[in-house]
Length: 331
Ligand code: FES
Ligand code: CO
Image (cartoon, rainbow, N blue to C red; front, top):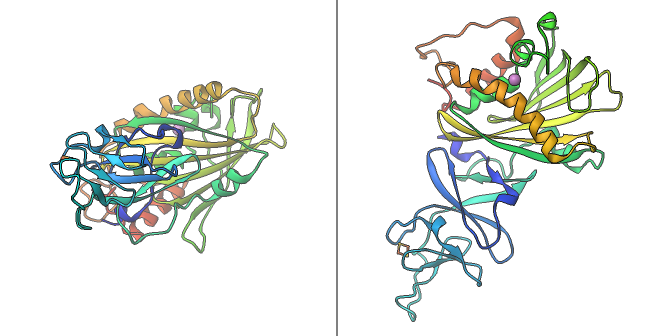
C-alpha cells in the first residue's frame, strides 16, 4: 500500500511530552511515540515484541529508553532491546527489537511514515515558507475526529462552491453562489495548484469587519494535505496561509488539524480556534453524510459521481490520487 510510504501527521508536537509515551493511530495500526534522551521523537508499533503488551502504557526511563510496562524490557530509539530485567547479565542479540518507524517534526506536528521508500520529509507546499515568515503568526488548531475518508476531507477543503450554503453568513452567502473560473495546474514536483480563485465572504477571518471579495490559491502538495492562501481585498496587506493536515486513521475515519499562519496577531489562540471550530462544525455533518465515504473514482467503483466545470479542482485532485497510485480512497 503506497500510503504506508507517505508522511502522515499523527499528533501536535506539544502533545508528546518528555518521559510519557503517546499512543497514536495511523492506517489501521496502533503506534507509540516517545522522546529519547535528546528529545528526538521516536515511533514504534505499539506492541512489545516479548509478549505483546502495549508499549504506550510504559514509560521513558532516565537513560532515554522506552520501558515496557509488563516485564520491563527496555528499547533504545532505533528499536533494539538493550535490557531484560529478569536476566540482568544477558545481552540481548540484535534481533531482539521493537518494530520502529521513521518519525520527524515539522510545522508544529509529529509525522510518521510506516514504510521506507517515499520522500525524505513531508511536502508542505506554501506552508514551508509561511512557517519561516515572521510576518505571519503560527498556531495549530484541532484535532477534529471525522467519520469519513481523508480524500473526502481534502476535497471539501478545496471546494469553493459550498461556501454560500454550508458557511452562509461566514464564508459566503446565497446571493454569491456563482463560481468564477479559475486555473488548475500541476507543478514540476507534482503539487496540484489552483490559482485565480475568488469568493465573496461576509466574514473571511476574525478581524474582517465587512464583506469582501477574497482571492484564494490552493496547493495539494501531498495526497492527504492541502494548503490555501487567502487574501481579502477589503483588508489590504492581510493574508492567511492555512494547511489542512489529515491523518487517515482507517480508510473511513480521519483525524484533522489546521496549521495556520495568519496576519492576525491580535486575537488570542482561543479566539482563532473558536472561529475555526465554528467553520469546521459547519463542514462536518455534510462530510460525514457523504456516501460512499471513500471517493468513487475508479472505473470499477459501484457509484459514479457527476462533475461540473466548477469542480475542476476536485476532478484534478482525483486524477492526482490515481496517478500516485493512491488506492486507499477508492471504492
Ligand atoms: Fe513487554 Fe514482556 S511484554 S516486556
Ligand atoms: Co467548508
